Image (cartoon, rainbow, N blue to C red; front, side, top):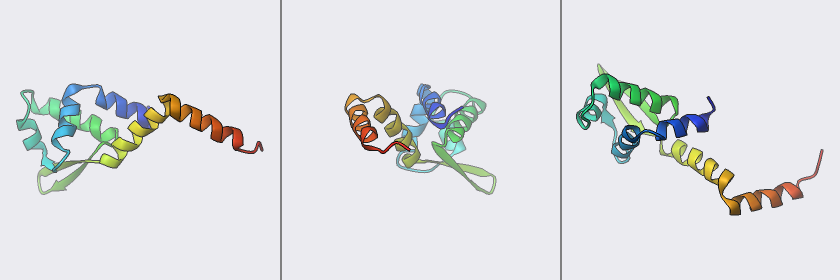
Length: 104
C-alpha cells in the first residue's frame, strides 16, 4: 500500500484520530494510551501498529515500556500532498509549471 494511502487508512478510524490527538503535545506510554480508552489493550496495540506502519507515530522502548510520539511532519506532508492533488488552485499552479518545463 502506498504511503499516503496508509496515512488515510490510519486516519479513517476515530480511535486512531483520537490517539494522534492525545500524542499531539506529549509522548505517552502504551499503557497510558490504553487507559484513555474503553477498549482492550490488544485493540489499542493494533491501532498503534497501524499508526506506526503509516509512519504517523514512532515508538521508543525504555526497559519494558513502549512510548509513542506523533511524527507531525509526516502527517503534514501526506495531508499536504493530498490537498495539493485535489485543490483546484494548486492544480492550476501545477499545470502552469508543467507547461513551462522543457520536454526531453
